[in-house]
Length: 335
Ligand code: UT7
Image 1 (cartoon, protein in one colour):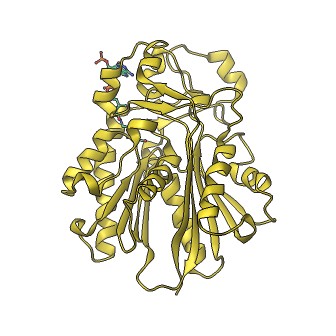
Image 2 (tube, rainbow, N blue to C red):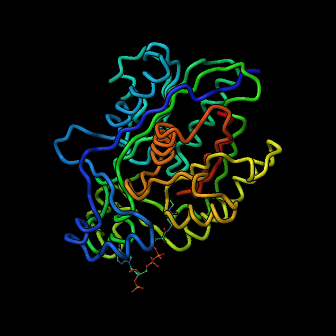
């Protein structure tokens, strides 16, 4: 039986830093509120004309991951692209990456699982590798949130949280026993789909309807989040799905060397850290610098943790995510 190992990691964030004070100049918010509730100090936003888009940032991260895996784009047999903010309504980001990286006519799958997108994507990649179908799969999480946020006081509950960026991982077939991706566990609960959503433009809310109705209070083409409800569900689901992964591998929290939680809110990460009695060096957070970058947050954090030497050969690494859908998932990796 084959397993998949992460053979290369890369990330990219736009140069343009947007601080909390910058936001307080365009909406009624302040640094103290944002830091106290979320831990975020600054985030990156694409600047008009800087040449970035969701798929372009994905390509930049992917090129770094490929180089570190000692592979070229010709070695990749499948692309999996996770985002909630694609360049276009259709087609998705995967085929755009394929074109920009001059890849062969390999398949490209787009994953639409928002904050859990990267965990879902590596789970899909892992299945293809385990069955022996592919040897090298490129997995990308990338988001351009700033292109679609309500940057007025009306949108402040959502807009201060999100940032732009991309992360990528190359998953490669391995026959090393007991190493690589040990398991992934995925869940969803569509009953709460509207608690964190962007309704239009979509086939349910198409452009003429939006223009005709356009209520000032509830504009469907900006994201909506029932923050406290999402928060309460997140802390429960994070814990459940981490436990599920640990139990499936006969491990306990004390075996975790590094937990990389989706960077939704520093308070959520701290809550989970406390629940599992983990020390500060067993949990990696960088939401302070980048905000919540949704499908990109785990691969960016994983890349930085690895670059900083915080993930070593033989470590037990746990990835966990929760977000819109609701969807959640975990991956247990023996590095
Ligand atoms: O990644 C996907 C998963 N997402 C999450 O897990 C996010 C989960 N939720 C959260 O992180 C938190 O709910 C938020 C950070 C989004 C919000 O924090 P909160 O403590 O739940 O605040 P709230 O929405 O209940 O708002 C509290 C107050 C309100 O004012 P009143 O009604 O008490 O007068 C808001 O209007 O804070 C006000 N407020 C703000 N004030 C300054 C909301 N946003 C802002 C803001 N700046 N940006």
